[in-house]
Amino acid sequence: MELKDKVAAVTGAGKGIGKAIAERLFREGALVSLWDIDFNLVKDLSKKLDSSGKNILSIKADVTEEDEIKSAVEQTVKSWGKIDILVNNAGISRHKTISEMSVDDFMQVIWVNLTGTFICCKYVVLEMKKHKRGKIINISSLGGRTGRPGVGVNYAASKAGVISLTQTLARELGGYGIYVNAICPGPILTEQTKQYPREVFESWNAGRAIQRDGFPEDISDAVVFLASEKSDWITGFSLDINGGIYIC
Ligand SMILES: NC(=O)c1ccc[n+]([C@@H]2O[C@H](COP(=O)([O-])OP(=O)(O)OC[C@H]3O[C@@H](n4cnc5c(N)ncnc54)[C@H](O)[C@@H]3O)[C@@H](O)[C@H]2O)c1
Figure (cartoon, helix red, strand yellow):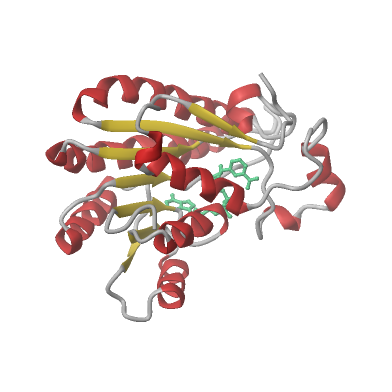
């Protein structure tokens, strides 16, 4: 097991990519703190993964609420003494054209995807610094790398911001043994994206080199690598996982 006895916090862990990441970290031996705005989702996942209730915490934590994140950090540290790994996965999208998009639509997505990532980093880093070690993995998006038709300027700008935050934080925290990397997924089949008509999903994959769809497990495998000691010479990096839609 790659992550035995490491303590990991995953935001937006209740479903989709976050759920797959949390399951995988748990299977790799980590103690996992599941944070989500929807408490029932993480409660159900915790029951499914760990009937003993000792190795998983489920916490209602909205990444935009500073007090909830402070409390989630405190509860996790109280239970297990530290946080070694933070996966900033919680994110939302609101697909609209610029003329349809209100300032509220713009700010809501920026607030969850970018400010939420900042808030979680801020409070978890305080703990990581005490132990002079930590791995932060921020889930950005192909939309933040290249701009993508239809994702909305709010989403693309928020995810580009996550890449920039990752690069700057990596430089700021390297001296404390804290690594900060990002993952930029292309279109991933989740319960949510499966709700789009197949032709819409396929249009997002135009030009893909590898002829199969992307799954949450494609992302969770990379998270394990970036959370482990095997990536100890990598920081400030944004890893594109998209089957070769974007090759640079
Ligand atoms: N699915 C894709 O194709 C794809 C592609 C690129 C990037 N991403 C990114 O991956 C991440 C996960 O995407 P997904 O498709 O699994 O999403 P999803 O909508 O299936 O799941 C998101 C989870 O985040 C939670 N959440 C939403 N707002 C929150 C908040 N304010 N605080 C805490 N939790 C919150 C939700 O309750 C949900 O459990 C997002 O950051 C998304 O932008 C997804």
